[in-house]
Structure formats: structure tokens, C-alpha cells
Length: 378
Image 1 (cartoon, rainbow, N blue to C red):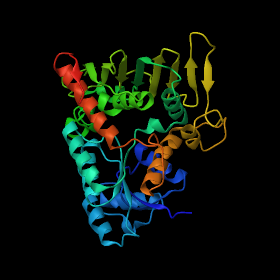
Image 2 (image 1 turned 90 degrees about the horizontal axis):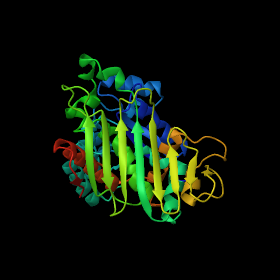
Image 3 (image 1 turned 90 degrees about the vertical axis):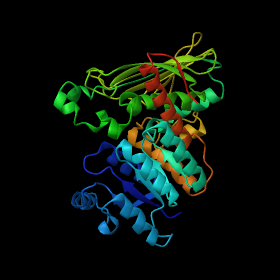
């Protein structure tokens, strides 16, 4: 049994949903051990949180720069091998860049950077580093999303005609209607979140899912945002028309003010021979639709599924696979890459996905600001 990969965590302390999601995911397949961290910018809170979750405090550092400096003093077989970057968006680029430059592998939350130029710079650093970079587009880890990807690759739908992806949430309703509150949320602050809130936070998940499952690339976009209030600088709702290949069109619909919605990510892909539909809130069901056959339902853990899907299923058929399992599958794929083992290129999103994501986000913002016009992606 190979020794566990030595994992460092940056951010994700306290009651952070992302923090617990990543920590649990790293434990699920027994591949990682947290050996160092900066969970919180306040050092006393940082130490207290480490004690709370039973992480040894001897390598809990006062800040990120100290973590890098002190870890590099340790023998190579003791220091952190990979760091998970779970901070607010504006810190992703400088932290990931410094980690890669100093020989650490990186697992990073999305969006990867604040803008497209940073993304391209980070890609150059990554290509020189020889390290592994995994971007946590979590939903690519679901077994039935991976099953859909493999079946489309094998021609189950024939030529793709149309894609429809939506990601509806309602959580910003609790703050957006109060002028004082909306000025205090970091996701609505361009200096911390970047140029987009809704598309940058959740719409990019939908666009990534389209490219991941179909194997096609989004070539141009036409976007319309809703900011809801004149003093709000960040989009909280958006509709994006997309063009992929010549005869493949689609739409990405995203909202953080969809009242009553929880985490409503869903995708439908329509082709000449059939269609697939999948919903994140019902992740165990992949629906295959046809004009000539009854509705088919695929579920995880069955022998009829692809190898990529079965490797993502940790428990027998009939047992729910959820968000922790999905993130754990990304960590599992990254572990294989870090160890130099063979892996399927669908096991975890990469730097390429991060660059594509930033290209998509910036293009949607440009489309809206230029008067709702078509903008080409690189």
C-alpha cells in the first residue's frame, strides 16, 4: 500500500462548506493525510480550528508565505506534496502560482483566477513546473455524469444538436435586497470575486459540464445579465446563448436569485439518435430519451456502466452517491496523477479547464457590456 499523499490546506476553516467538502473528500479513498495548513488568516483561530478537527498544530502556519517557506526547509519525503487552495477567488492565482513555482502539486477551487490573462500566465507556470494541477469542478465527479460522457463519446446520441444547461440557486436573495448587506458579501465584491458573480461562480460549472460531457468546445457566446440593483456591480442572474460547432447551439441559464431553488444544476443534451438528461439534486439517475424507444434510466454501480463510471462508484448499486463522493473522485484522480499512475483524462478537471472557464466568463461579461452581442472565445 503506497504511503498517503501529504496534503496541505489553504483556507476552508470554520464553518466553510468548501472546507469540509474538501477535507472529507480527501479522506474517502484513503489517499491523503493533512499534514499542514493555514485554515484561517487569524492565527489564533487557525490553531483553534486545527485542534477542533484534530490536525496536529506543529505545522499550522501563521500565513501562506510562511507555509511555503517552512515546508521547503523540510526533507522532500516529509514536506507537503500537494496543496488545496480553498480561499476566496482573488487569492487563487497568486497562491497557485507560488505553489507550482516551488514544486508543489495543486488542487484549486474554481474559478481558477480573477481573469483570463492570469489564467494564461498560470498555464505557462504550470507547463514549466511538471506538477499536477487539478481544478475542482466538483460535478464532473458524479458517476452518472461520467457515464454520460463515455456514452456520448461512444456515439450513443449520434450528432449533437442542442445543449441546455441550467444552474439555479436562490441564496443571494437573503442579502441582495438589503443595500447594507449586499455591500458586505465577498462574492458581490469585484476586488475579491472577480468580474462576475453568477456566471463566475455557478454558470461556469454549467459551461464546464457541457464541454466535459459532449467533448465539444464553446466557440462564441451572447449574454444578458441581471444585476437587480443599480448600485450592485456583480451579475446575480444571466442567460447565455452558446454556439459550439456549426450546427450545435445551446443555452446556459444561471441565477443566484431563483427564489426557492437550492442547488439546481441540470443538463440536457439532444442528438440525432437520442438525448440525455441529468440533475445534480437527483444525481443517481441518468435519463436516456428517444423518439422510438421507452425512456431508459441508468444508475450507478451496475455492470452495464463504463469503467470510468464504475471507478467513481464506491458502494453497491442502490446506495446514494453524493457531493462528497463526487469531490472524492476528483481527489482520487489527482492522487493517481501525483503518483504517476495511469488514469483516464476524465478523472479530474485540469489547468486547461480553468483557462477555458476564465475565457468563458470574460466573454460573457464582454458580450453583455457591448450590448448583448456575439463574442468569440479563443
